Image 1 (cartoon, rainbow over the protein chains, first blue to last red):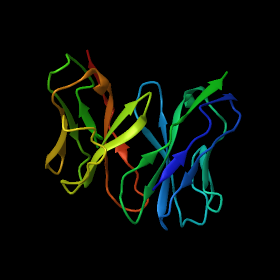
Image 2: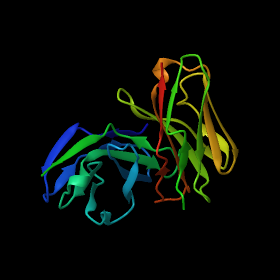
Image 3: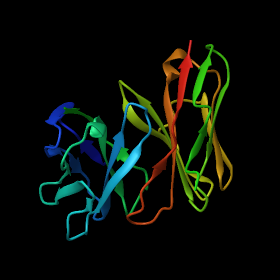
Length: 115
Length: 114
């Protein structure tokens, strides 16, 4: 069974500072993918970044980077230079790359950027 | 590319009525996922299709829920009869099932059953 855990219900960060959103996972699959999505107050789900379990380097997409520590089963999202528009819910998700293809989501972290 | 298109955006219906939610996939994608989001349960997968074939419907709450994919680009999720506890935001997402390929979500349908 797959499980995604996000232990931070809410986080605050000062504008222009960096913030780390935690995500740990559990799976027995040898190959899997980890995703982060942003859900602003308008409700849409926006794909941010992907990390494959066999990727040697941490994924980066603009101001987003994924701190992937495979042995610790963690896939934390780092947002650098926070902007007011980053205020949203952030979801970590996982998908097996060898079995079922559905995406399992964590419970989310609500990030608030303070001016 | 117009993205994943869901309709309606909002639906308010009375208990016992039939509700049909619609989803148009991104052209070329071969997988379709229906999710439900509530405050209590978060994002739950209801059902997903690969190449128009339902693969896993274990998340469908009960027989009142049914989903179809009559062709490669369109899907419906039907609730009959609807109940107040079905009130939620329903998302569909499409993907090209390939390692590293993300899922694109529609804007969601906010369903309220009164």
